[in-house]
Length: 158
Image 1 (cartoon, rainbow, N blue to C red):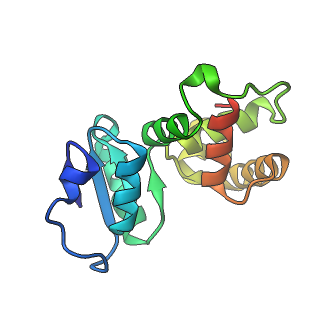
Image 2 (image 1 turned 30 degrees about the vertical axis):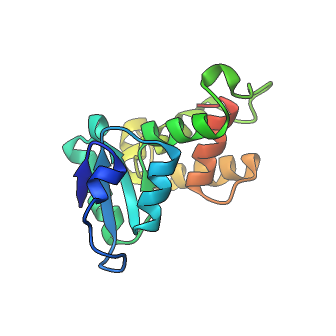
């Protein structure tokens, strides 16, 4: 785990990549800082303000398994920079292709919750959450959960 004010400060003096999956926690992020972190082998990124004990544990577990994980705040910031601005510049979703339940599940995924936590939150089974995710990914024509969240943020669905 590396921590600092920025990704560059957190990784300053960090050994060469290859020592295993790395979790990065920083106060502020830019697109360049995230690129630097990814090149250094970072697989999970959290913003300090969002680093609750539960989210840290989830990120550590994800990093240990080699899963890529990025907090919602960091993702929104990066997509905003990539899109050239703030929420006013996002493409609005004319008529949402998602149901209310699918939007809720997508928002919970964006916050970093897994299927079990989403199922508890919505009082349903994990199998139901899995089916809702499958259907929303089909409707949005995305490849995976991260792609669904990125698409949702870019288009104003979440």
